[in-house]
Length: 279
Image 1 (cartoon, rainbow, N blue to C red):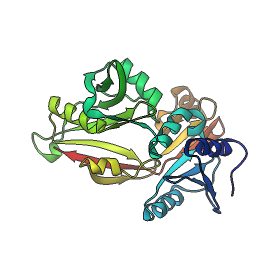
Image 2 (image 1 turned 45 degrees about the vertical axis):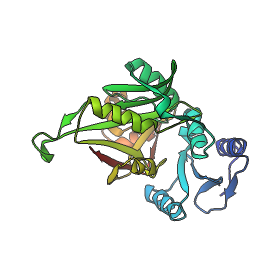
Image 3 (image 1 turned 90 degrees about the horizontal axis):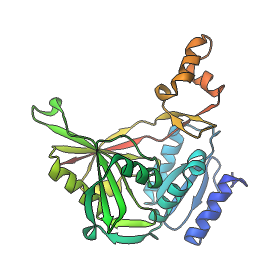
Image 4 (image 1 turned 135 degrees about the horizontal axis):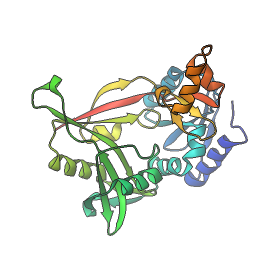
């Protein structure tokens, strides 16, 4: 299919600049760029494949032990800096900072939001507790967690919590940083297990498995509606209320058809990997 002259060429040229080499892979259904350490499948918003097509491609690259990411057009256009940070991390060209040298401090919601919006591919999401790793006065990594909650289905006194977000400062790999933050959280908030998700578009979960997390579930692909003007992805039930009210006022179109006729495009991911860390 080749690389088109717009956003896909931009990705290709940027990768060449970062990695000093990148190759276009000839495929009939996919637009793939490969570097030494990474394969990137470029997905246009108006593509016509199904999630399983991309899952099969993921599995093909896993068999040759090569990281594949699915990069959607809207993600590149709206989160370019964060995408480039992930590319640099995958390509092992970040500066390395040992987590044992960093200090841990609780940080405010505003500090966590600013950092995660700048450095996490999916930005900030609500969480109760936020901890930062500091090099001097500079935050170099942030982890956000839920509060512990009872899980009576697993036992009378069983408690679980969630690692909601983790990100490092662009250009830096904090060696052992996430492990240090998790240990700090568990010391202050004892639970029986800690749950988290890995986005299959971007991860096969190796980092979690190295820390002792166990894969417990492969979550099915999730469909979103992309607002073509704002670039924001919404779950169907999270579309702005004004738009949902307009949908309810008409009686002829399905929600999907209504949204696609009113400035939205349906997109999806390839699902998530659910991990549990038992304490």
